[in-house]
Image (cartoon, rainbow, N blue to C red):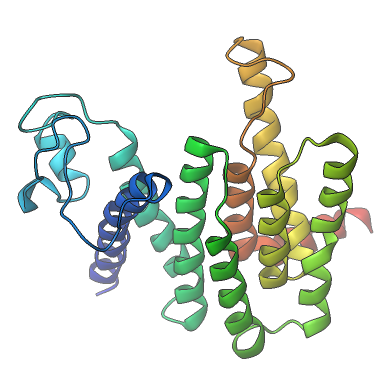
Length: 250
């Protein structure tokens, strides 16, 4: 029975990941995400239902459009797989619970935010509002932390980032607002964990890009994707990681 649930949860995530690909492509281009059928961005031919099966359609079509045979970006099945995997991780961590639903919604928003930020270097305010709304539900109906922890979480990372942004102009406002609303959701302990992982992953990628000369020291790098990774990790295991780290100091 548990295997069936695992398959169902992963499939649900992969199917939604297919829709998220549409959102990621259309939203920055101001296309409607509720009207119109999926189409090949190269030949504009309508994609048929059998060509939209998450992951498997990409493998069956050998990574090419069925009509114009233009290569399809590998990121589409990757996003479908990551969404399915994140849903599965949420289920493994929290089981069948409201916390799992929150985790799945948070993962979905983080995936969309991360990919749009990579493409456009922008995080749309509508996603900040969505995460804040999610946080309100979590804080007042699910969280076992006190309200004070969540309020501190709102400011503990966002305020230092704002100060750094004012001084250096090196951090985008979208990243600051992302950490504010996510911090409110996570509480201050998990917020610190989220930023730690975001900074580590972002730093590793930045150093790699510099060493391989794919970017320059003064070039802007989207920080949102790495913060999103940290936020999801922190929601899943943030308190445990924080407690473990503090135990090393005592």
